[in-house]
Image 1 (cartoon, rainbow, N blue to C red):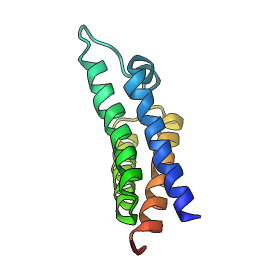
Image 2 (image 1 turned 90 degrees about the vertical axis):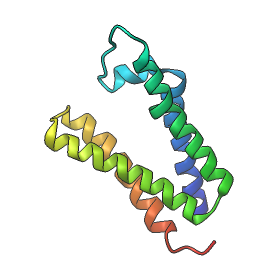
Image 3 (image 1 turned 90 degrees about the horizontal axis):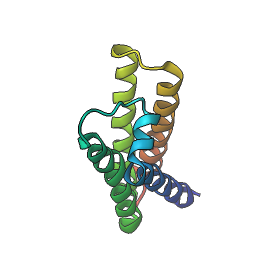
Length: 120
């Protein structure tokens, strides 16, 4: 069961990344990010919200070790931490921020707790 949920989390990560990678304008609009007079924001979406997640998910599946999955959890823990700090300091739309943060937190907890002490 752990292997199936790990693989599902990695595939979900790739799926999340594909939105930023292939549809950066839509992703930016979904995240309430506004365009400026440059396309640098689209480049950032493709890189940090897109390619980073796509390649990380692929690498985790390729490595297929408990520690790789645990490290994916650490990535999600960092995202959740940033999201929850933002709720306190920036006051973004609460439901949207807590939904995204909740998904990140659930993935972080699963991936770390299910894999950190699991033998290779």
